[in-house]
Image (cartoon, rainbow, N blue to C red; front, side, top):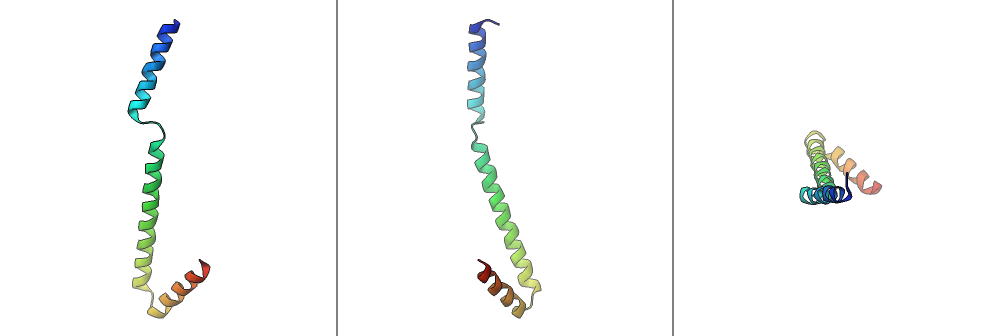
Length: 69
């Protein structure tokens, strides 16, 4: 393969990569989705505990969590 052909292939590939957006920005989107999923799971957990625990038990759990934080 001649050098001009290689240079043309490299330029074409670079252009393709730039257009596809594979510059690492996709990882930030995945991280925010993961964080949102964790928040939703934590909220579901709180809702479930709020409906199943008696008020006194819920108060003990809440106060013990504040001590741990």
